[in-house]
Length: 156
Image 1 (cartoon, rainbow, N blue to C red):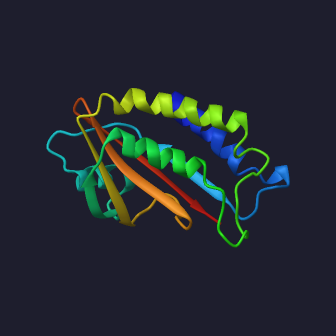
Image 2 (spheres, rainbow, N blue to C red):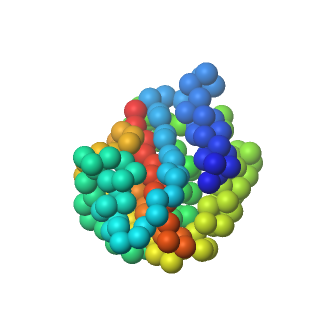
């Protein structure tokens, strides 16, 4: 998990890189939160354990590992808003290096997802650790009696 989060942080730094001169009003954030022992805890309880007692999850649905991978890929490939007032580093997005980084992250994430007994997608109504504006996602990934939250969003 730490390895995945470090790789993810590197990709996000490149996407958010304002020093490139070709990034505007863009800040993507993602994190795979550490495992919590499930025991008799529900998804709602796990979310509160990880994000704090103020966190409230709205709509929840069971999803597949492919759904999680698709969300990750879409988020990391986001080109910006339609009016061109906010976008990630255009010197990086779409390059061969960017594609390789996404592929590496997908492979790392699949190692965890392939062991999952249950994956729940949820919407955070309150207590989001980031600031969602352009896109966001939230997943509870249950593996061998433990749960990992994978959360991401992008703001301006």
